[in-house]
Length: 269
Image (cartoon, rainbow, N blue to C red; front, side, top):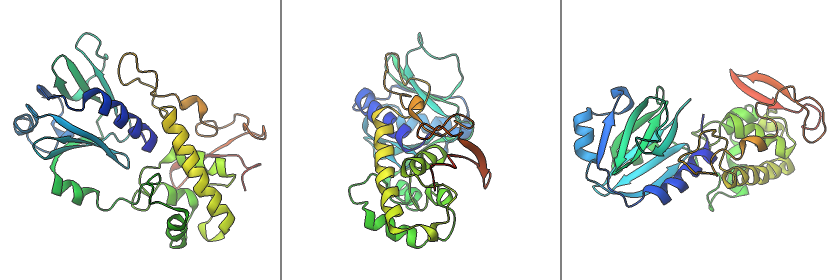
């Protein structure tokens, strides 16, 4: 599932590519992907400009000039492609937005959605999300305060979107590896030094992943050399059985509360 770095990569690239453009057409292949009848969906979005492409947690927000917002959550298997009818992918798109000859294809939204909401509805929908881990206002003190109210397992807390927005299976494991701390540790057992290291590792890993375009394997558009560049830089996620890049012991691949978890039992404590 795309996480904060993947969605931030999409946000930055889409802000460059489609911000200020007018939606000239739309097609809805799967009505369950949207939250309003296709006719009304088209009536509201067609003819309006994209005024801002924003992100909150794992969501992308397409702000329209008529004060509506398209809220995207890709969930598991979803991805975007910006192209034309000539270079489109051989995949079914659940929704498309056209900007003249360029088309934004929303693929794999069997579990994901593209909902049309007012600004007031957006505020309500996103109100339960936790803070952004890379926000300038999110400090070590804030992070420590959040952890002080938790009694469970570290990985479970890191992927809780109500507690902290944007981190999922991949980056929770990568952050813990960077910090040298097992994702299976109980939060009350963490020392203040380990909490500080976790905070530094969270900042470092997420910023590096954004710099290299996250781990999505499909370019956003033809010539996109950024998207997916972090995939080969993952240290432990989906590397079960491979040698640890730090100590060369085999990386453990396991399950934790039905989630995949990867770590090195030798150099993480």
